[in-house]
Image 1 (tube, one colour):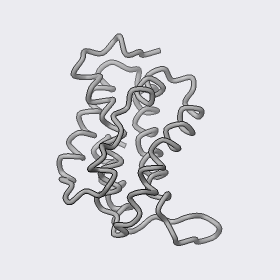
Image 2 (image 1 turned 90 degrees about the vertical axis):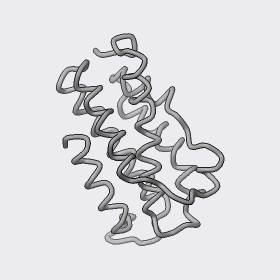
Image 3 (image 1 turned 60 degrees about the vertical axis):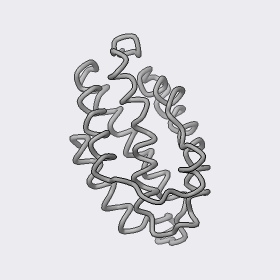
Length: 152
C-alpha cells in the first residue's frame, strides 16, 4: 500500500493539488457561471463521498484529507483558467503516482480524480436524462482531455 511517506515533497504537492486542478478545469469550462457556488460546495461533498468509496486506498484518502481547496477568489468566480496548465498538472500527478504506486493503486488514484471531476460537473447540472444528471458538453470535453492527461 502506497503512503504519503513514499513520495517526496514535490510529488506529494502535485498529488494534493490534483483535486483542485480537476475542480478548476470543470468550473473553468462550465458555461453556467452561476454554478460556481454549487461546484464549490460539491468539492467537499465529493471528497467525503469518495473517501468512503476509496477507504482502503491510503494514498487517495491522504490526498483527500490534505487536498488544496478552492481559494476565496476561485470560489467567488474565476476570470480565467488555463486549461493547458490544469491538464499539465494532471499529467504530473499521473506521473508522480505511477512512479511510486503499484499499477493498480495508480489506476485507482487516476479513476478517483475523474470521478471527482464528474461529481463536480454534475453539481451544477440542471439537465436530466433517464433520471441521471447530465454534464455540459464543455465539461464532458474537459473530462475527456483529463482522462488522456492521466493516461486513462
